[in-house]
Image 1: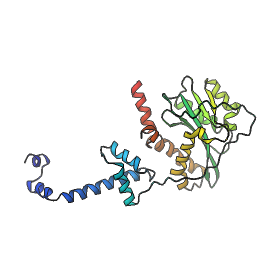
Image 2: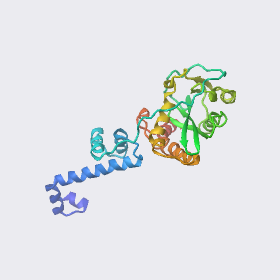
Image 3: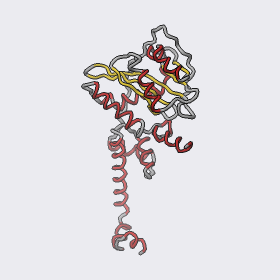
Image 4: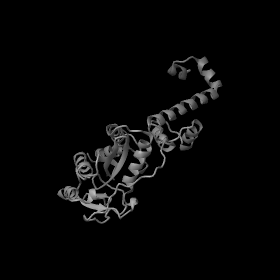
Length: 276
């Protein structure tokens, strides 16, 4: 037989396979289960069935969401993400100017460097709080600037993160920068950095976290997928883990439902290829 010649197998092996389709189905089922487990393990147990399905599809294994969910449920594989209460780091009790909410919850962008959002959170360690400031581009949800600090001064938080963003992704014409109305964003040290690049500032309404939902969502992801599952003895230990999470996992590997399950870097490269 031609098929046997191509596969370099004997005809007896072929007919034995034809007589045992159930064994082949069992083998295929076990192989699929192994593939699901591998993707679950590669995500450090962070992925649920939708993202695992996308990963398998990207690799040419076209399987339904229902099938992946069934395998995960049968094998006891659950995403480690869970909700936690977040304490606010926003101190809006200051006399600096408060900008209007120009972003107005329009969280999409057609081009890079049209709209940036930023926020500050804290990470507990045995040495004390580690403060993390991030700057995100709404075009591809990429974290383009971030800073670690041991205090809440503007120079060590927002200014430092903004300077990194300027290096990683030059501001576009008419760039809108949105944040909460905290003192670190309202002070002259920060505002002068924006005005020097002709960047328009926007601020959330008082006490309304939904006005800065993408930043809030990133911090929720960071804490649910990393922080709540670790005990950091030192600030340096936390810095190392968060660096890996942002630069290796979040920007390059984590698939975002908002981006049609692309990673931020895939979205960025798609744009660069289109306009190169």
